[in-house]
Length: 187
Image 1 (cartoon, rainbow, N blue to C red):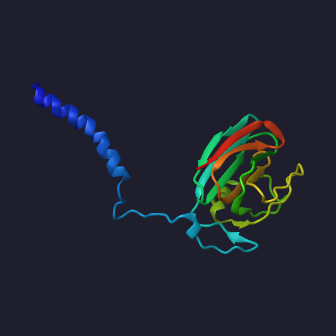
Image 2: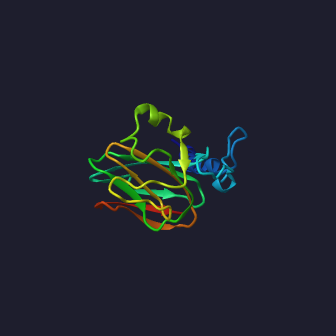
Image 3: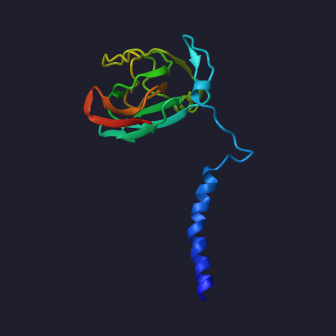
C-alpha cells in the first residue's frame, strides 16, 4: 500500500468519529420534535390533577438490599417522574433528603385500598390522577411535601412528580432501613 493511501485511510478513520459528534450536536433535523422545558408546561393546579404530559421518568427499584439504580442524575428545572417499585419484603421509602421541589404531586389513591398495582393498573398509571399530598404510610411516616418522598408496601408501586429548583447532590434514604441508601445529583 502506498504512503498516500495509508495517509488517507488513517485520516478518514480519525475524522469520521469527529464528524459523527459534530452532526449529533448540530441543529435538529427538520422532522424532529423538540420538547419544551418544564417551566413552559401549563396544567391545572387543583386538588386532583392529571400528570403533565412531558416529564423525565426514572424507574427505581428498592429492596431489602438497596436501591437500583443507586444514583440518578436529574436536570434542574425539568419535570421528573419517579416510579418506585418495592421489591423488598417490607415497606420501603425513597426520601431525597433536602431536595425541595416545586409542583410536587403524588399518585392519588386511597391510603389503605391496595397493596400494589395489578398489571392492568400498572399499564394505565400514566392516566392516573395526582394530588399535592400523601397519606401516612402503614409504619406511620408521613411525607409532608417539603422534600421528595415516595414509599410503597412490599410488592407495591408509588409515583411522585416534581420539578427540582436547585442543583446539588442529595442523599436518598429509607427512614426504616438505614443501610438502604442512594444519591441524586441535580445538575
